[in-house]
Every structure is written in C-alpha cells, then in structure tokens.
Length: 367
Ligand SMILES: [Fe+2]
Image 1 (cartoon, rainbow, N blue to C red):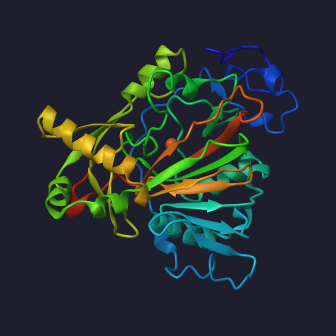
Image 2 (cartoon, rainbow, N blue to C red; image 1 turned 90 degrees about the horizontal axis):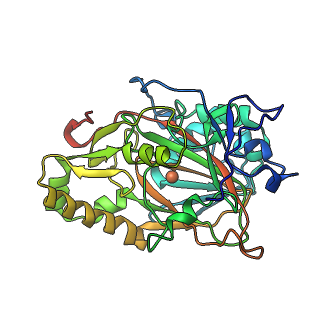
C-alpha cells in the first residue's frame, strides 16, 4: 500500500497526528492544511441522544429569500425531474440564516443541491464549520481521516499516495457503492456538505438516487410490507476494516434498527431507508427472505438511472444532500497515476446529524 503513515513532528501541526499522505508529494499545495490526518489519541464515547429540530421547519415554502430574490444572476436549474437542483449566482458563504433555512427545505425536497462557482473552500475552516453547524450537530467520523484540528471534517482523498478506493477495484467488478452516510448511527445524518479542493481532470463524479422516488415506484403490497419493518444498519464492518488496515477507531462501532420506510420530518415524504453500504438484514424475516428482499431493493436503487442524478465536480463546486431521502456513490473511474487523466481528488465533508428515524404510523428506530 502506497499510503504513507508517518509520525514526523511538524511544528505547525497538532501533536499525535499520523499523516495519511506523502508530504513530499504535496509541497506547495494551496490546501495542504486540509490534507488527511489521523489524531491518534482522541477517543469519543458513544453519541448520546439529543434533540434535533430541522431548520426546514422555519422556512417559507416558497423560498422567497433564497430563490425569488429578483437577482438576474441567480440561475436555478433542475438537473433531473426527480432529483437534483443546480444553483449559480449565489455564494453559500454569504447566505443569511433565513436563506439557509430555505436551503434546508430545498435540499429535503430535491435530495441534492449543487452550488457552482463557490468561494466556500477559501473562507477557512472556522467559518466552514459554523456554516455546517447551522443545520445540526456535526458528526465526527468514527474511523475516517480528518483535517488537523477539525475532527468534524471528514477527509475525502484519493491520490497516488492513497489508493484506498482503487485497491478495492482489484477485487470487485465495480468501485461504486451506494450508501447513506453512516446510516448505522442511532440518529443518522440529515444534511451532508461536500466540497472538493482538488479534482482530477476527468472522472470522480458522484451519483445520487432519490429514495423517495425509489419508494414510490414500488407496488402497493411491497410498500405495505416494508412500512412495517425495520432493518439493521451496522458500523462494525467499517471499524473492523479500519483496524485491519492499521487505522484508528476513535469511537466504538454501533448498530441500529431503522424503519425501512422513513418519513421526512419536514416534507412528510416517505423514502426507502436502506443501502448496500450499511444495511445488513431485515429484522424478523428468515435469512433467505431478508437477503432476497434486500438484494431486490439494492438492485432497484443502484440500477434505476431514471431516479438518479450524476454530478461532475470542479474545484469550485459544493454539493449538499439530505441523507434521509437519498443514497449516493462516488465514481472512482480515473487513474490516479496517469498525468493526463489522473491527479488528486481531495476535499472535505461536513455531516450534520438529524432526528431518530421515524417510519410510517410512528414506527421508531431501536438499538
Ligand atoms: Fe458518502
């Protein structure tokens, strides 16, 4: 594995860090302070239950402050009929709280909102973190690399000196893997923000699927069946893989049993809440029944391109999505070793935690 792990002390950096990159490969990189590190000492207790109020509740449904400002520079485009909206002409860094609340509602309605030509990556980690905190309590990834001094920034990093995802492609036919971010948490994420600081010249797109549309496509008898069931989501394999690879587990893994059909607290829409990344079994079914039903649903969400949107990144794009109504996958289709098509895909994810999932007729998560 080409990943460099070094305990070299770098004077400007926090002590007790392991670097998850090759320092020499990034000399002069403008965003070097965002390169991936592992804090070796910070451990977290299990996340306690907490109150969550979705910012979308406070929003005017017509979104007059965000979308109807009369500014001709603001261009709002539906990327597909069922999922994805692109916005140009608005800076996330300048949004008022009223606009952010309307944005929370828009993300819930459209699944993912893509902002182009943003200055967000240059406003500094303190302001970036504060932006995320408007939408909810920030998640600290239990195993992932982060940004020095900002454990809430989950590092996204695929370059010649970190072949994590490319390695997987040697044992599987595809690197795609649909998931809802850390859905095993007892109160799993609502809105996630991802911005990229460096992008390959081609490739590295992200695909999102609408779990609302995926639910609505199902037949009435299957909808009814699923509405009464919970499925287990597990963080254990992720933690075991991290330990196997010599990485750090800063919070012990958890499992949750979430309703398979989840109701969004603001829109009231029903959405499938299962994903091949973390959902392991359907509670109360025989193994063969659970396997067959999950495979049917996983195939449905991963193959239904008519309920998906694929977004090409550049290094001034910021995407925000609602994990309660979507699943997504990275597309790791480029050669990190090729000077023409390769390069570094690097960015950070800020993930906000939301409510304890609630299903149809008040079916609640348990753990
Ligand atoms: Fe993700």
